Length: 507
Figure 1 (cartoon, rainbow, N blue to C red):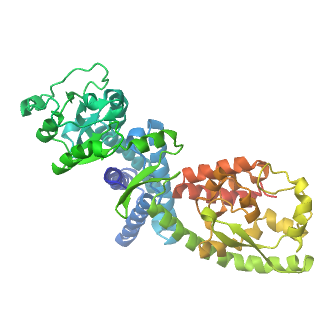
Figure 2 (figure 1 turned 135 degrees about the vertical axis):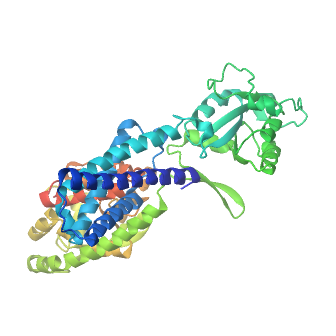
Figure 3 (figure 1 turned 60 degrees about the vertical axis):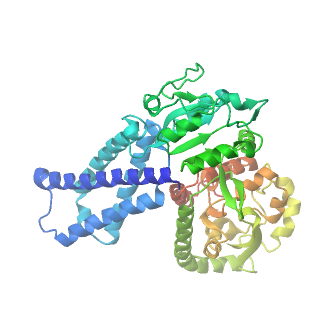
């Protein structure tokens, strides 16, 4: 998380926390002194437990399920939806905690309901004014959070580049230098002696003297210079950062400019032409640059996930696997008797599967087929109803009668909690293919394995019996990977419970 993202995170946190505190106080006053529904027998310790549960619910929701979305790109509808989602989650966790610790104040539904309504109102209003202040609704130049920025570019790049930068609420562009005079045949050459002068005084800079170029659509961003005098401007004005977006073939062409600006203590952002071209051709636009062993390298990734959330996902996996194993043991013991009577042989089925980014592991299931199922699969391939690299058929003769029952109830999947505990799988992810299926994958298919495979996932809760196209499976898996967050995992787990209980989409 970069500096601006952290700032936004803590500002939203402060607004929401203040809203929660105010709403709790107001609801207490209304319920006690206006409605008169406060039980006088409630002790201070009980009220302390109430407040601590509410605080724990708020912190749990915020630090486990918070999604970073730039306020500038969040529409009014998505802002309302985000606020309601957050508030509902806070109070669901809150009520669950009150029930868990057997807090008597859980019976005061009026207090809890009123707190939720007032909390939702204050968070909506608070986030509205926060967004307005951060995105230029108020005087941005006076904001302590604003970074003063200068831009060095050319005429053909200025309009689009400046318009994109202005979308960042934390940036205040004070001026632009158009350096077309240094460009010849698409190559930028820095000439220190080109029309050198220092006529741009502090007074002219303060009054934002403009040199008119009609192609600049951002009227509030003045063109300061078109020659070497941009160095005087940078030296004499207030600038925290300079963005350089120039056409050049080699880094040495702009090295002197970067070195000079670095010497002034200004942060410099430099475009790399090679990356410009690659970004235009890339489908994903996730590029990060970092120095490895002394070399600056660009990292391309189809999807970027927050490391903290991934760590929390793993903790949830371990806890969920332990609980799942405890629940599964008696169920497996009961199921084992009729299963082994109908089809003698091993109780568990072990098969090599392909996991995250091609890692091989053994998946465990309760055996729901006859022992010779794998050998008979070849002769049944003609009945495969899946279009693509998966096998599925109606009334598969390899499945035993007990097997059909445990498959319908998803009992055969229970041993996979051991896979989750080992770290081969996750509770939620994409289904791991067999080795033979994987060997037939095209390049684009492998992306569905870029996250740890799961017991359940997006396509399983989307009606798995109704999906007969492997490309649709890949599409759903990639949609899960691209949009992954902890809240999405919770939603899929809840839908999985519904699917298992209603047998929806099961075969």
